[in-house]
Image 1 (cartoon, rainbow, N blue to C red):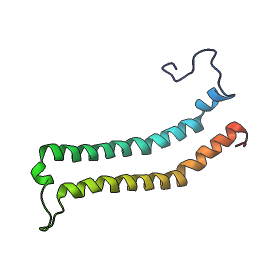
Image 2: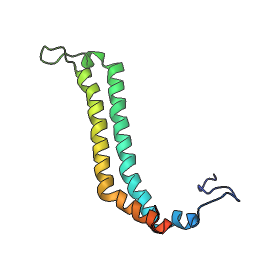
Image 3: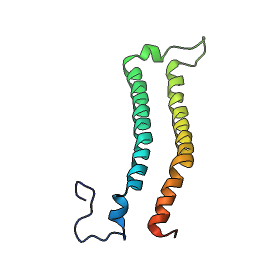
Image 4: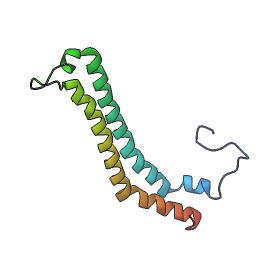
Length: 116
């Protein structure tokens, strides 16, 4: 593909591909997706990087036991990574169900003439 994401000359494209790609509806759908996914991804990667950096450069903090138990700050932060992953997944699914999927489905129906 070239820099503008167009297939090489002579490549087979579905009918109306260029029109859909260049349409205002598709651009709005793409913007909506990017507005949610990019910041969420950046936030999670920052959270993960913080965890890794704390493990590497603050082992005494990560090894701090809580309340005299065997549970440490590092263990809780590590488990927090899993919790965060599930929370992001649930939030994304909720967002997609409410705001994204119906618009994407309407655009797909417009392109295909309603055929699935």
